[in-house]
Length: 145
Image (cartoon, rainbow, N blue to C red; front, side):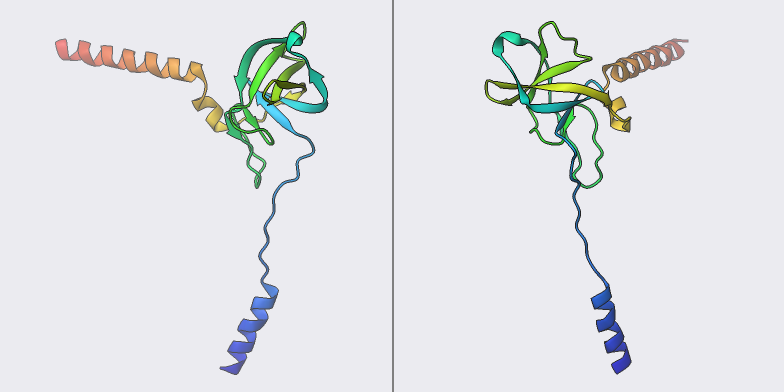
């Protein structure tokens, strides 16, 4: 019995719990499948801003590093994105870091695919809607015959 107790205590010493969180290389936002690195030192004036084009809708997972949709690893849900006049959104966008304070975010790469991107796609819901209508039409036609 003593051996079991000693073995149990020894196992407790060797068993370690670990907690980990990712340390991101840079702050980023994702807009329409594109990842933009936020450049904290490049401010954008109100006169340079174009239309609002989106906002942060999800947060990047601190444990796995996975993200989907319009996400960010730093900015809160609801943080708005804007076009920058005379700059293509494929090159850069503006991010509202604080009320009436805008900073530049430069395009880095395409966001990785995530299955929930399909659920958030307008095209998916259009296809599902058309499919349901067609199915309903076929069922009604078959009942009339």
